Amino acid sequence: MTAVIRTTNLTKQYGTQKAVDSLQLNVKQGQIYGFLGRNGAGKTTTIRMLLGLVKPTEGQIEIFGENLYKHQKEILRRIGSMVEHSGFYENLTGRENLLINAKLMGVHKKSAIEEALEIVGLEQETKKLVGKYSMGMKQRLGIARAILHHPELLILDEPTNGLDPVGIKEVRRLIKSLAEERKLTVLISSHILTEVEQLADQIGIIHQGKLLEEVSFEELRTRNRNYIELQVSNDNKASMLLEQHFAGVEYEAHGEGFLRVYSHMGQQGKLNKLLVEHDIEVTRVAVSEDRLEDYFIKLIGGGTIG
Ligand code: ATP
Image (cartoon, rainbow, N blue to C red; front, side, top):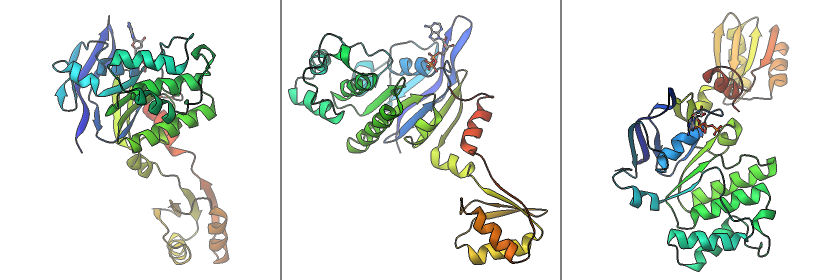
């Protein structure tokens, strides 16, 4: 897969503080990339650098295989973005706002506005002024503006910030369908693990300006799979029984009677019953907590993300 965004040693220093510290970001074509970190981790500063709004102290940015600073105008034309404050005129309707934006962006087709409004589900809002919009509607209008010119890369800074659970779900669905239908590459920042988890293929975790990890969700899930832990009197016999009675069982024997079963989650009662019925003493049955969440907490040094 070709890299759409690649940064090398990207650094931004404010006074003595490194807001972004030697970041090596790799976003590949067609990916939804979740850029995850707590408040103040350096997400917005990174995004601002990617959009040419903030100048790095050090490092390089390549987008679509070209140096951002050498080809800024051409590159930015191929990117749609939504960064924090919406900047819409509150006393105009969504459509009127998009008309102004389209002109500024050099988008002359009127159908582009209707198409964008339809995609984000605001086409019926003909009279409502943006000042009367809910937070979710404003976010959706922001996304409509970002896709007016049919970009290849969409960069969204905390697009679900301040939304209620329904709004979050709507925006998530919208991003997913956009990415699929328009074959977009999407970089989306968030401080909420579950939000990114349900959306992204790949994640980059930033903490105190540094990229701690860049990994696919698939890999993370495999590494942090939940399991049922059993402590039994005879692990050889227990293993045999598991294999005989639970088709496709995935487990590991850890010695001294400890077994971890990675498949058949939720069937701990059945497992227990089977073993006991075959005269195996079961001294412990426990289900692991959400290991993915734990993993993040460990990675960013305590506290939850957010
Ligand atoms: P949030 O979700 O809260 O916006 P973030 O991950 O986007 O967090 P940044 O906004 O990039 O984080 O901020 C990273 C660090 O850089 C913070 O400590 C912030 O105070 C600092 N910082 C950001 N912009 C500036 C600036 N213009 N001048 C000085 N310090 C700044």
